[in-house]
Amino acid sequence: MEAVVASVSCRSFSTPISSSSSVAADVDRRCPPSSAGSRVVCSQSLQKDFGRLHLRSSQFLSGTDIGASAPAAGATHGRNFSMAIRANAAQVLNDVASPTKEETTVVNVDLGDRSYPIYIGKGLLNEPELLQRHVHGKKVLVVTNTTVAPLYLSRVVAALKHGGNNVQVESVILEDGEQYKNMEVLMKVYDKAIVTRMDRRCTFIALGGGVIGDMCGYAAASYLRGVNFIQIPTTLMAQVDSSVGGKTGVNHPLGKNMIGAFYQPQCVLVDTDTLNTLPDRELASGVAEVIKYGLIRDAEFFKWQEENIDRILDRDTSALVYAVKRSCENKADVVAADEREGGVRATLNLGHTFGHAIETGTGYGNWLHGEAVAAGTIMSAHMSLKMGWIDDDLFKRIYNITARARLPLRPPGSMDVQLFEDIMAVDKKVADGLLRLILLKGPLGNCVFTGEYDVKALDDTLRHFCRA
Ligand SMILES: NC(=O)c1ccc[n+]([C@@H]2O[C@H](COP(=O)([O-])OP(=O)(O)OC[C@H]3O[C@@H](n4cnc5c(N)ncnc54)[C@H](O)[C@@H]3O)[C@@H](O)[C@H]2O)c1
Ligand SMILES: [Zn+2]
Image (tube, rainbow, N blue to C red; front, side):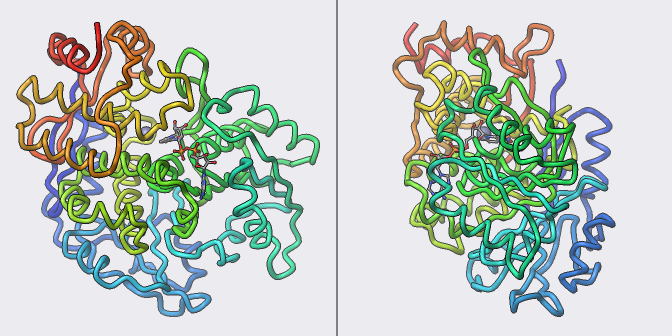
């Protein structure tokens, strides 16, 4: 079967790419192995967009070795906008050592005329212009839930109306929880949109975690065949992963995220201050996806995490900003190379086949997504170890960082081998009856997406972690 695993060494980290030639070519163009300088990659729409921030296009750097963040010549609101599309190891140390409160990082998701910025920084909800510039039309529908609404809805509404901005702002507040990520609850969004006469030029805003982001995104993709959409993620999980890349959808009782669409937002606005109200367990859940990026493609980032995991859990602002930034850079890179998951994007699902089985098998909402992914990642690493694809030292490092993040190290006792097998049989990565998995292979930072693995190793791993 198809397999992934060429590695392009990009100075500070290696990029595993699909063997599919189109994906490989795409990655190659974006990430030349011997890149000595930087290139301008921003799309016209982004140039226009950032032009309003008085940035010169020469500051839109990409490639593999961007230098120091370049402060904008005339930043708005006394805030410095630094471009940090992708950082090398020196940049890592620089950023963490000297964060400034005033800095906003912008990571570009490079998708041609559908490119969009991810704004990352402390206190961004107090920057109305950032939000207003991406609102189209005069009508806005904010989709949020019963937990997030009392915390942040009024601030978002105030930002939208700031300066006498003439917009009609409506909101729909959904019940909170993964168990409500379904078609029935989604209907409430359409109901509200129709009743409040949201038109083709309206904007939907997702304010909340990954559940709200996925649901609002799918509503935006399908309402009137597609309306403008903005993500304001308020969990670490959503800030580092679900708000970026355009995967939207809802669960079906028989499988997670089985109904959905690819639909990219206009922008993503990450205010890391929102993480201050997040419960510890939810914060840890997001850390599982941060660890994932290190394991699948960014060894330097994983090493940084080993040194800084306590700062992340303590909600140190500069550590959080850095973790979100580097995660978004990794995700943006992968999505730009393979938006519709023809190859390399599948690697973002490390641990997810086992994880989704845990989420489905235990009933949505009982295990958090990141908790299930963490246990699933340990299971994937175990399988890789059994096949001799990774060494014992790497397995121990994965185990240790997962334990330090206070994430589960194994599936719940209620999951037996048969249940795993039954649920994994309907996984979205099954093709022609063959289950394909993301497995670690080689040194830290490398993985494969493959159907060519030892079935006995899968069986051994399932039996090692759960009862028969
Ligand atoms: N689309 C993608 O690419 C993608 C990627 C990863 C995960 N996901 C999806 O994301 C979902 C998980 O996202 P999640 O972990 O954010 O869960 P979630 O959306 O359920 O949020 C977790 C909890 O935190 C609460 N909350 C949110 N922000 C808060 C804040 N600032 N302060 C206090 N409480 C807050 C929520 O109300 C909820 O109770 C899953 O459905 C998963 O499938 C999607
Ligand atoms: Zn995930």
